[in-house]
Amino acid sequence: MNTDLAAFYDDYWKRQDLSRLLARSEVRATLALELLEANMPILPKEGFRPRLFEIGCGPGHSLARFDARGYEASGVDISPVAVEMARGKGLRAELRDITEQSLPGEYEVLVALEVLEHLADPLNILMKMKEVLSVGGCLVVSLPNEFHLVRRVSLIFGKVTFGGYDDPHVRYFDDRLAKRLFQAAGLEVVDRRFDVLVPPRHRIVRKLLKPMLHSAPGLFAISNVYLLVPSR
Image (tube, rainbow, N blue to C red; front, side, top):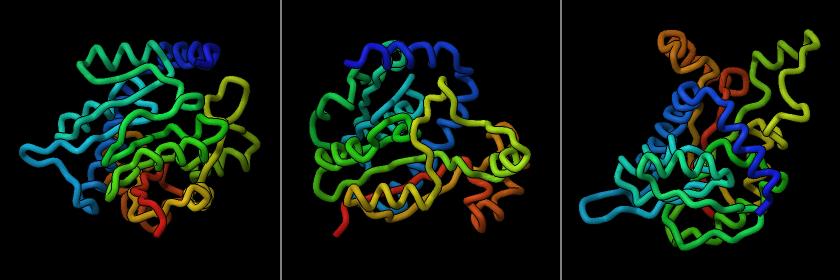
């Protein structure tokens, strides 16, 4: 395991405003569940819990939602601090460096929410995820839209709001670059959802922006959430 990277993310989780992150995680988990329920025949039902595995589960905010919805949910993270937080919620979380180790088992659903942008080789991780996907299964991946309206305006005025030595994001995406990555991994987009730029606490503003979000997600989305299957 990369102990320096584990220490970096231990410090990252200790510094975060977990209530703010929980709100965004709740939104992304909700969008992920909407995609699954709208598109996939393999859904939880009485006597059957589809196996769901989350890459980079962090403190388990999203994992808890998947578990509560009826999935047999488990996950991994490189941060011991995050894994202990997830386990403290009663969740199945394992300490694992996915850049150096293979993924265990076989799953109906593989999830990576706001994870691939943290990795030097996101293509390799997508390929690993695809390898442990069961027949008829899918991936749900969310990626930040790094070039939304606020960031574009800030760049025009010479203010750089991302990058730097302590930025955990090492790859930067918009919708076009995300689809290029998926194509390289042999995956195709079945459906997608968007998380609006405005924070979840501003419910009225978020509702007002929804029409613009769907007409111009490149400007008004902070994250894009994709449902993916292996290319035919």
